[in-house]
Figure (cartoon, one colour):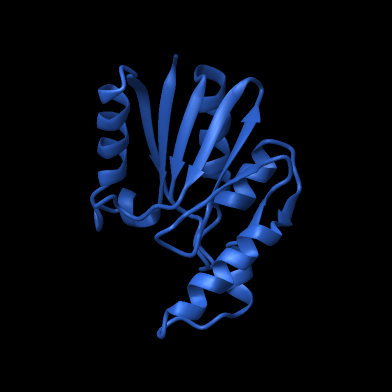
Length: 156
């Protein structure tokens, strides 16, 4: 199986933050007898994210994408994934409930219109629950490639 990882974030390509997710994912897969063949990092730029997805889909059976699923304006991964795979971006009600539940438990985080942004996923996607944060991930298949989109917080 040809597996690639894609890390997204300006903080990663600028060197402000070390990408621990890529190493964690590669080690976990290797432990299960699978090997990552490619890794790519792009910034918070929708055309770059779309291009990376398109390039990796052509040479991969599975892609694990981390980052860009949060509530801020530079979190563009869901929209880029929808556009790159020819899908519409829609609010997933289960994800919306999750965002509101987690947000209600955090004293410092207010529920606002940007919070609903985290509930938007491409059509024909399956939600991946996140017990540790507000943003859920999602899974979809495109041109025979399995794509997994996960939040970008570093693993502990």
